[in-house]
Image (cartoon, rainbow over all chains, first blue to last red; front, side, top):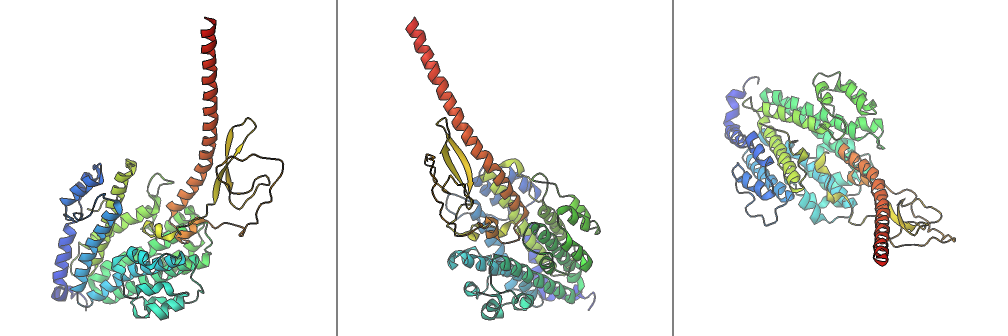
Length: 351
Length: 132
């Protein structure tokens, strides 16, 4: 039903939307970042974070404070909020949340598989998995030898099952194939998520579809950049690109032919959204990297999601903005703890 | 993908080095450092060695047969599509390695030169005292 979001959304999801907007108001502001950047030690950082929405989250951490402890506690807080939203949600918002967690599940599965390749213990690996991507069959992932084993024995009951259609052809799980598996799973997941949002229609589709299209194109660019000089062939590379983005089949075909950064830039010149982004990339270690430029664009789109009401995209946008904030705080904390402050201002401002 | 996918869980706790530094004694009795890639062998040397001093004799020792022909690139521990910044970091490190080894050799020569200078200055002082 077109245009009925204002009438029906608040019945089921109004409380949660109010809650997430309140949480969004607690994101760190520019003033907070200016304070954090001036800290001399991690203890100062902890004191400054106590005045923000984080409060005393580091109170029961023992000395000495390390960056990984800060990261872990921030992630715990985000997961607590996410689980609260998820437990209180009704359809279709709960399916939306399930789609959001699939991305983290894919990362966890690949982490467990590559750890098994290196003969690491399952306990260590489970401790490192992302909590939002936790599922009950996780401990059994490392026994799988081939992708079809993995599917039939372990993942057939999880939400990842429908994404396995293209991935069954590889024989063994070595380094190259694990990477290919990860990207193929993510491609199917992104396309399924995009279809779900499009079918949902209404404001959710208007907000989420551009965000997911940008995510698809961004993955295509980053895969291309990272595959220069590796043994990944052009056809194999093209099979990893998600197709639900603005680049379309023509753009993806051009991108698959690119052999260096200049050629990639020429492909982006055809698209008015991506031309300024690729031009903003500086060379070498000075200036921004391609990933930084994409993060900035993602932040812009996620902040704009809050300007519309009555849609599920606010939950996605809030989670992504919190993750960017975590990356910023970890960057500042690393610069402080390593006493290498030249690039401390290279975080990405959100508000 | 991205920086969060790179972490200490991806490498084994036991690693074989790709490059070793070995020392040998040059003609003037000073030590000289050299970078040696494991897998490539120079006929006079025996392959990766500790930093202990070895005298180069005329005889050559037969090098042990290598079990593998090319050592794998450690970048592959982190998957195939590693972040671009990691690749750049590996390239910069490799460039810096040769420089570091040359600097160590030069440092030894400087130290030797300084000790010679000090010795000569001492001798000069003693001759000066002896003459007076």
